[in-house]
Amino acid sequence: VQLVESGGGLVQPGGSLRLSCTASGFAVSAYPMSWYRQAPGKERELVASIMNYRATTTYADSVKGRFDISRDNARNTVYLQMNSLKPEDTAVYLCAAFTWREFWGQGTQVTVSS
Image (cartoon, rainbow, N blue to C red; front, side, top):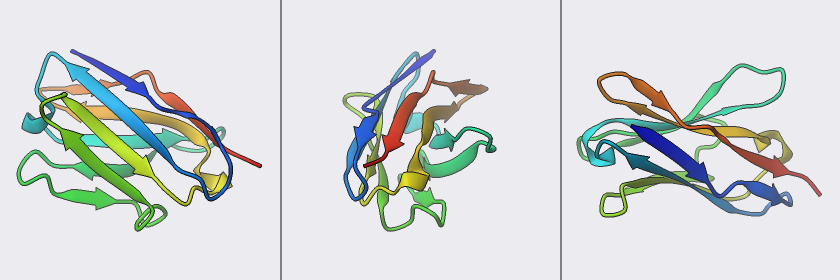
């Protein structure tokens, strides 16, 4: 099993980024998938989740209305569309899969700065 994130980078406040998490070894449609983030000196924070059944989504209050989690079953990929980015969104973003055990990607850096 492998999770590979991509799409991070440097963006100005108010900008957008789309993160991707491509899975191998299992189907993303079969298990809950989540995006977390961790900023320096802070605890890891759950940002968004998408359930396997009906693709129900949930969001942290801090990103609700700005971020959107989705998945493409054909590409076996989960996305995190991030809009109206703020400097406090700066963090390493990690993809997690909750299968027969937890699997984590290596993370992708998102920096929001002018």
